[in-house]
Amino acid sequence: MDVRLMTRQQVVAALPALALWIGAGVVWGQPTTEAPAVTTPAGTASTDAPVDKYEAQRIAGDDAYRDGDYDKAITTLSLLLAELPNDHVALYLRGSARVELGTNKQDAAMIREGIADARAAITELSKTDEGLNADYYLPYLYGMSQLAAVENRKEHAEQAIKIAQQVLGRTGIEDFQKANLYYQKALLHTQLNQINEAGFALQSAIDKDPEHLAAHVALCDMFARNNSPEDAKAQFDRSIALLPEEPLLYNNRGMFLQSVGRKSEAVADFDKALQLNPELVAAWTNRGFTRLQAAEAVAAEADLNKSIELDATQHVPWSLRASARLQQGKMDAALADFRKVIEMQPNMPSAHYDLGFALFFNKDYAKASESFNEAVRLNPSMLFLEPWRYTSMVFAGQQEEAAKVFAPIAEKKVEDRVWFDILTLYVMGKLEDSEVLMAVKNTDPAGRNAQMCEAYYFIGLRTASRKDAEGAKAFFEQALATNAIPLSAYRGAQYALQKFSKGE
Figure (cartoon, rainbow, N blue to C red):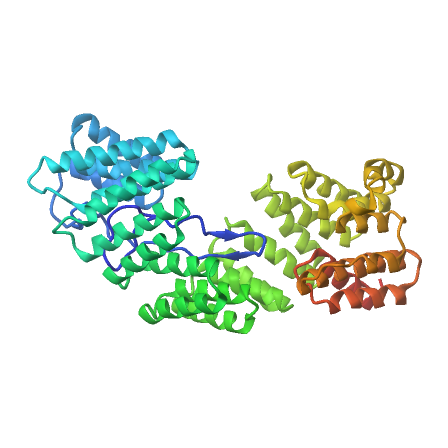
């Protein structure tokens, strides 16, 4: 993500953290840049003309920055600055790299160094005949917004907003530069939770440059988070009308539509995004997720295969493909994918409990218990795992230990019990089928369906343990009838019925 100068066909500036909705499995697309060979603050690209040593270093630093190798960019530009400490171009470029690296590492000291470089670049440029270049303020403004977040000090953002407003009031600034400044100002307002002011700044950026993709993406996201679905959809439509060939906007509108249950329209948007850019990884992932939610596991797996083929370093499509394979009964392949996610994200609790669920469904209860326990070690607040942990321990022959571990739940007062306490008490044999069903009290339809799905699944497990296969099948079918597709209980019922159909 480039916090520096971009032409109006390109995009300035890192977006706020929108990238991933891990719980939902979908991916917000973000603007990327297709930079020219070299971009200096004056906006000139490299030519075939010979360059001196210092220009070569600027070019090398710029190239490293655009490749995302910020350490190399900083090292290269520092060598130049050791000889030419007042080189405003090198200060500008190094400041950009330091801000990016500091943001990635959440390193306040590094961000501060980047801000200092940006300020020095502005000062040194003012001593030359070139005078003002509004683009030099971009790494400073972005650095201040990120410093405000890292240090949790709103005064950084407040100070930078004043600077942005001062620069915007100067003469001689082109509209596309004003658009970039307004965009950075919006990020600063966002740090202060000034939603209306941020929205106004983003709209001002679009007014100055209707093709400012980052502003469109951020404004659509803001509407999706803070406005009604109808208003959010209208903003996506307005942005797409201005940029009808931009695949990122179709991807993000598709993700929004999926989130409000309009799955067929979402798939159509992902189709359009991929028609415009067949290598847009986020669209492959999101279409795969949407198809998985629609129980189209074969088509989902195909989309996720393509996503992984294009970028095997992202863990979300591996996890989604594992679920798609599990939905098809491909247990060995699903387990391999879940283990790959743990390899990529060893400290992510969901990676461990997803593997635990798959092992549980495959009746490898001892290993399932180990995975659930590791997830809880990483995040002790995950109460929804309690009935699964107890059941896996009992099925693994650890009934006495399970009784000790979960004794505090049995000792809770009735009025203090939450839903997952009730499920755990049920699998402990302390409640009957009718009691757990009567305990479903969630007034939200989706929440009620989720609780019913879990109740029917665990009742089905108990019924199966009594050697009543037909009765268990009926409960598993009732679990699926809730259509609570994202739930592990739903996947468990689905897998159990597949086993029944194969006579296993």
